[in-house]
Image (cartoon, rainbow, N blue to C red; front, top):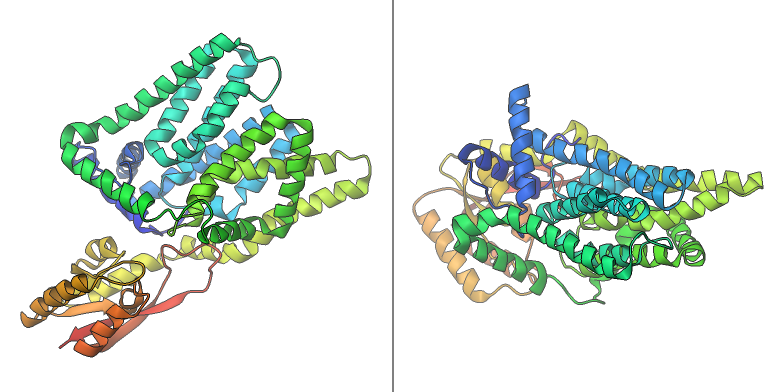
Length: 474
């Protein structure tokens, strides 16, 4: 488990959950609000306080530890029901040691709970399809509803695969007729929708205008400005992330596994392809793609790999059996070669928190720090006022630069000290417009520097970068 927040999202969750616990009013997180994640955070912080764990970051980090552990077990049972025990063992171990999965399992974000609820929902749905018991159908709807309440966009992106599984199943002779199938599908979708609406309803009831503004903001920056189309150059970055996490050996096994799946179970092929291709087509084409976004498709990619490995191990010739075990070890160990240093460092050190606390001790109490994405880190750990810089991809609007300069001059004219990190000085500045503004109008005086692990850095980027703190004077 990570020692610190690792990302701003984790810190934001700890703050929103703590405020919810204190005020008994559900606080908005981001995106659709992620209400269940905020409630889980409040519960875990409350349990932590009872057990003497006063650090809310540690409490919310344990959410991902717990739900990722349940997810591995659920994935084993899911593959066991789809295939056999050998395939399920391969699949669960490959997921357990996957660097992207390990990444989302160590700090408090909503990816691990979302994946956990998805796998539990699929498992319950398969149980209903094989046993015909109505409680399993209702249980699957409950899990999918909880998934939507914890991370709505992942549910929407995997809903086509869920619908495919519901309507067609994976095996012949399902225990219902076509008429029952549509009726039960409508019942399930209605139940899921009611659960999602129920969890989100406090946002509409308490502060509808604020929630509407936040949701529109998320829609604007998360989709309209962030999504670059179905075949953008950013998709290459998404595919590269998958190559890093599976290596070429895993990708080759995946492709062969797809062929085996197509031969032996075309329904399973259609289900798994829908599961990974739709989220990958969306997340892979985002300008802000992060490895954790792809955690939701990992099981769908691992199932074909495991089918191929199990087929090799069942072969009568021992050479093929040995080859299967060697490939299996390569798939789980090779990616960890590049990521293990990151996970070990996060377990022992909290470089993100240390950096921003150091900024607080290195600046005057009345200082202002120019911020970008790190505004929350500065206010929470550095305990300093912030001045947000213009942050856009591409050219920075000249009017925003003029307004920023006026605000900065106003603070300096009052003899209040102002600082900026070298990270913020250069980020969101593709054409060096902000850099030129600061360089030609102000004196930039270095104060010191410290190592910092960036929150958007992938687990594979093990090299630490050093960033400095700079004082600004006229």
